[in-house]
Image 1 (cartoon, one colour):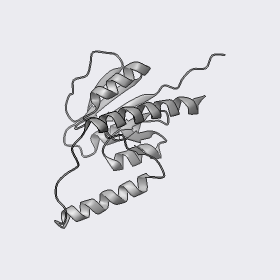
Image 2 (tube, one colour):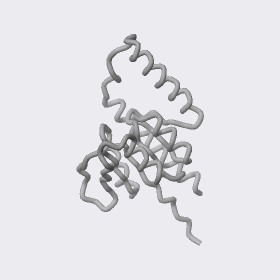
Image 3 (cartoon, one colour):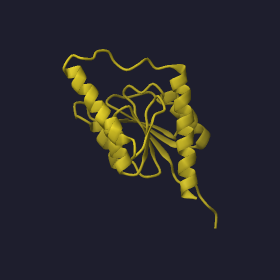
Length: 158
């Protein structure tokens, strides 16, 4: 009886994702299906492994809901949206952001609390600005963490 690898898929919360090309490159190397989920059509390389999914505009969390409805324990979600990462973790999937931060069931509570604290500080005017600029080091970290997650899923399925 031959052992088959799990059907790992990558779901990308793609509207403002800076690592789409990196996801495509890794997915090609492993032969993984990728879904870019957004509110508008996005260009994807011509390859049957890659699909652009457009959710209805104006529906709050439409892309998030589409991803959560389909994600499974052998899938990876790429998102900067911490509540979406939490929802994916609840379904047993893996989640990471574009800077390579891997969300885990152990770390997601702190991430949600930090997000809430920062939102409150911004609302009170105590904090301005946005996230730090995306760097080449962030891109490299993302690639390494994505590869690590794929390998972990493969090991767990053996």
